[in-house]
Structures are given as structure tokens and as C-alpha cells.
Length: 599
Image (cartoon, rainbow, N blue to C red; front, side, top):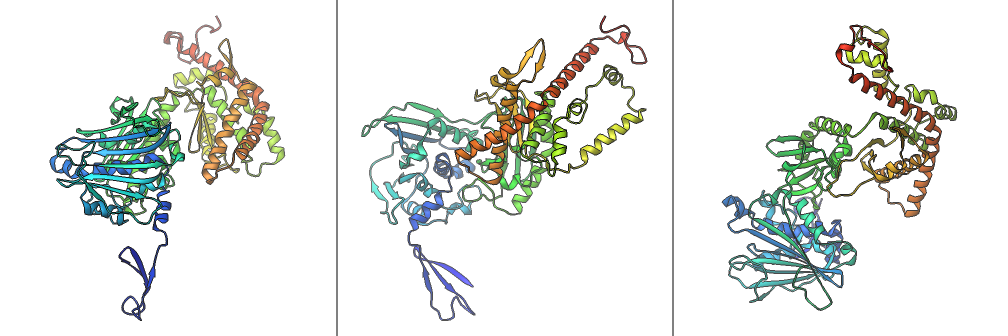
């Protein structure tokens, strides 16, 4: 058996046989040649600068949590300032200031010296668990400076360099803090020497957005204020006036129009909403102790068990929060540990899936038309042929498919237009129960729907709809959520290629090429994501051309039949509109119409 124990700042390892750790009472020392390098590599698990900064904001909120819980609110407002300093345009330093209790000498030393021994782990309502948060800076900055004052003690200053295995103990100074509580306590954390790769296109707005998303549930508390400021200056010249200031606030779900899903149990509080508009950045998220873990659609351990996967949970019109308790996150706090608590949480969420999915589909169906459903069917089949996903489809069957103009019009690929007489009977509710032919057709369709296709289906589904107004103001051409690709029929580029004359829609070659590119790009992106690939630009471009060319070639052969189907659907819709305008007095008992529609 292998045993490991801590000896000072080193790890000692031995091999135990019989009684005691080692038969001959000898041991061997396991040493880490470069602890700083190991910590730096661990810190690379942080994917964004925003996620790193949240560790230090989190520490400040934790420091006032006991006060908040014991007094049902803050005795003194919790105030945080996050300042970004740019030197000659480049982000050089980020400072986080709070007015909390500050840290005494022993606590400050322990945070830096002892990794993985967080005292917060013993307090269930505190977020810290791993004792690593203080070292998160290593992924993005060269130095960490901590300046803290606790009680009536002197202010302590500590510096940690990520490339050094040693650091000097905190130094005491009579110098006060720039921002502190009414008694002069607080902490100032500085990430200095930000690596250029982390500062590209990163600004105060990004930090404010990250805070609002990450601490959304805590920002709704009274007495908490978080401001993000950005300063710009030339080299060696301090800028004292911020050029940008953002005050973080909680998102108000009551202001959003849509269908609500609310559920509350012992360890779960859920409030989801199917919105009538897209709200990018507000997709359904999971929160633990008021802090975001991740978007539910990005938690892979859940998505693997989910029935509707990203089609539901990553859709920008599904927003809200899922607050959980009693479940442990992994070290980067973007996933959950595999245990019984996680399994119970996932089971509760999955039990709601079907109802939420139906509500989402009902909202999306309002943005679609029968004509676009016809185009979806043809696009789907074109993709099947282009990527060879029809299993063992012979060349003879493929050619038959490409030339199947009759099938395109009469039900194999597109819905068969309903006659005027049948529509009238549908309105009167007649001819449905007594028709063996209709009954047999219904049974056949049901069986066909349940029967699994012999060939492999394409990995993406295609939907055409007009996207609702987006909160970001960006008009997207398409959107991929998991294996669902939705194309915006309201985008100017789509409308420019959609020829319309006297109310008739014409499917043009230009529209065919446009849709081919979108479907190809979406399909390739799905495959790269599914297989974990990060292709070069040359590969991406080659795959795009390869698939879009095949899809476009297939579509062109189907355009004539598709156009006839679109016209048939339009004719049926016009007839249906005319029927709806006919008063009941003009209909006789047998369902026929008195007079002629043409008259």
C-alpha cells in the first residue's frame, strides 16, 4: 500500500507492509522540483480572464456572508470596485477592492502557503472549497499583490510572483487603503503584468457582464454594490479619472414576456422561462450558493443524459436560473462531481424536459410557415445525400431520388396539398371516422413515423423561421443549438435572395447557394464540436466548399419540383382563406358551398 503524508512543505511517501507505514521504518521523500510550475499548469484550467477575476470577487462576498446571514442583511453595505488599468492601450493591471473585514497575518500566510486546505470547506454556506482561488492569477498575470487591513492591525502587503518558488512574508505598513469600511478594514488585490493574450478586446463592459452573469442571484440582495471602472493612461502616468464605469445589477425575469416554469424542492429552486424574444447571455444557468456554475446546456455530464440536449437547454429563448444546494463542483466550478446528489438533480431536471420542450416548440412554431417546412424537407434530404448519410443507398436509388419530381409534389418529401373539398370537410368535421381509406392512411403514417429509417439520418435538423428581436441588436443569419440548425428567414441576406412577385414565392439559384453555405457551415461546426476537432483554416474552408457544392448541386435538381410544391401550398392557403370568409349560411348540411368561389 502507498501512503503519503505532509512533512513541512514537502510530501513524504513510503510503502507499507504489515503493521505500520513501512516494515523497516524507512521512508523516501517525494519532492516537487518546481511547485510554482505545477501551480501555473493547474491554473491553466481557467479559460477566461473573467473567470479568474470572479475568484477574487467571490472571496470578498464570502467574507461578509456570515454577517449577512446572522443579521438577515449587511450591517454595512458591501461595496466592491474592480478597476482595469490600460497603459498605452494595453491592459496592464486589474485591481479588486472591497470594504470587508480584511485578513490578519496568519490567514494571509495560510492562503498563499497551504494549497488545498480551505477553511471554508467546513462552512456549508461559503463557496470556497479548494483553497486554490488565490493562485488563479497565475494563468493570466505575472504578479499578485495583496494589501489588507484587519481590525485595528497595521495594513499588510504581500507579493507573489508566479515564476518564483519563494516569497517574502507580508510586510506591515501604516499606510491605509484607498477603499475601506467605516472602521478602515478591507482588502485590495492586484493582478499585475497581464499577459497580452488575455487582454485582447477585454474591457470593463466584459467584466461587468461576467459579474452580472456569475453573481446574478446575489446581486438581487439589498445592500450590495459592485462597480467596474476602466482607466487609460500613458506609460508612467497614473490616470485618476475612469473613462468608463459600469454598475452591476441583477436581471429582472418578471420584465420578460413568456411562459414560466417554476419548481422548488429541498435542494432545488428552479425558475425557467420560454421567452418570446432572444436574450443572448441569459440562457438557462445553474447556480450554487448564488454563484453561476455554467449554462445548463454547457454542463456535459447533464447533456449526455438529457433527452432534448442543446436543442432545448442551449436555446436563446430559454432563460432563467436553477439554484441548487448540497452538490459539489469540480475545482474550476463549471461542472459537478459525479455523486448521488448530482444524479438526483439531473433526474429532477429531466422530469421537466418534455413540458418545457413543448412550450419552446409552440413558441417557435409561430415563427414558421408551411412553405418554409417544405424547404426544410428538401434541405434535409440534400444534406443527407451530400454527406453520404443514407447508409447503403445505391447509386440507382440516389438517381431515382434526385429525379423524383412526382414524389416531391405528392407526399414522399413534401406535404401533399389538400383539396378544397377536403378542407371544407375538415372544417365541418365530416368524413374522418367513416373513411377506411383515411383510417388506413393514418395508421400507415403513424407506423412510418415510428419505424426507424434503414439509413443513417443526418446529424443536424434544419428549421426555417423568422428570428425574434434580439436584445443585443445583432441580426443573425442562422443559429446552431446542438444538432438543430435554425435559419433566419427575416435576415436581409435571405430576403434579398428570395424572389417574390404578386405574392408568389420563387426559390432561386441564389437562395439555393445561400442556404447551401449555411447548412454546410453548420453541419461542419457540429461535426468539429462533436468529435472535439480544432481544424486549421484550410481544412475548414475545404470542408465548407466540399459540402456546400454537393448540397447546392442537389438543390438545383430539386428546384422545379420544389417550386411547384410551393405554388400548390400557396394555392391551398388562398383557398382556405376564402373558405374562412364564407358565412355559415352559405354552407349546406352536406358540406358543399352554395354558389361558385370563382363567381
